[in-house]
Image (cartoon, rainbow, N blue to C red; front, side):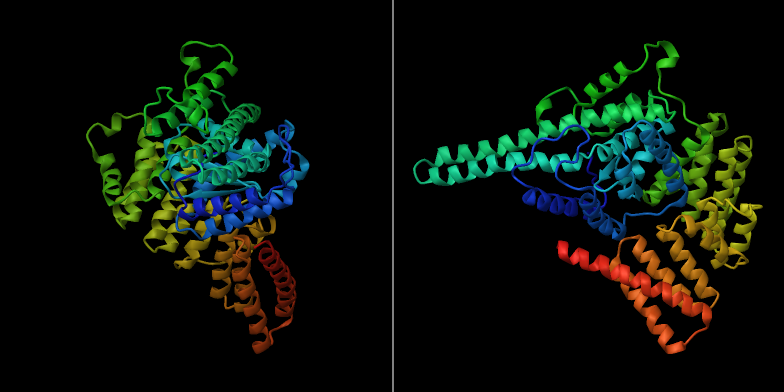
Length: 508
């Protein structure tokens, strides 16, 4: 499991939550078999994940970028289908776990799995991948940590070593009065024994996640060559030259070992066929977007904004030009240079006109640039004709944002409601719906939507506050029949949120 340097609250929360679970794990637990969750029920693991993720949603590095999230979610969904079809994901875990993706703004090349089916992906990882196959290898690896219940198994393993650890400390304390040197050696030895046992168990989990992840990603239709090529990039990003020293002091197998293992699983091929798969224009653009979304600083934005004007740019391969033009336009929007942004979008649209995915991304970017400039009407025009149903989440969010900047709001509320009927945990869309209700002078519905946005991010205290505000508004204003129906929903949802608050308090 690759714990990230991003999400500052993450490490403290994970450590405190896992240490608490380790401390309360039963001492009689036995080493589980592959995929066994040991003594931790699925519901308990889910609640542990909820407690961690609630804080991640509040972290400044959490970002709900609809374009990047849609890209990652599309890969994740394919892997989920393959995991179910291949028997790696059993029905109970599929139903009880969250299976949500959180995007972090950090530039670290990393991803991480959390208890209860949560998955974190950092912008730094997306920025270095060359294809969906490479990203799928990382997601499949982390998904396998979840499906194989590795956190539960780590806790069970910890319960086996803790008695030895405590015994070593006790014996060390007893020996201290007679031989301080022996006491120090005994304490140090007990700590080393526990650490080594935990490292060995973690390495076996990493190898298992590689093996299961490779099977899942290839069953999902991704190219298995993305696994070793991604490992090579992770090796380069690790910040040191891996010469094979001290392999038993690391929780993860050496990248060189993992690369060799993955290559041994692939059919024997030679020549160009054995190289990493070539990514699409969409893949190149998504990497460029991740670089800009990670907020690299004004110097990097300025460099990207001027790259298309450098000599010889037109002779670059199409994927390279498309990525550079996309990054330039996005950087222009961030720097509020709307003229340059429109120019770069126009160049991008012309370059990728023959690629459907690239053309769509160019349209979305054009609308995004106009919204950054506060021109909702031009943003709506840039989106072009929209289907009556089946609207993608990026288009939906840009449509709602355009309405906030002066574009026609006709039908926006209905579209947001339709999306939430099938995606009730989408906190970002609930927030947009609340703003749309307020613009339509529907304060009670806006309060309920604000509460649902808090509930979607597991902030039950915030949800209770907004639901109660809705009840108070109704007592003061005595609305119509539609408002009474809304209050009935609010009353029911308030009871659910209060119940979750009580459960959290009991666990604490």
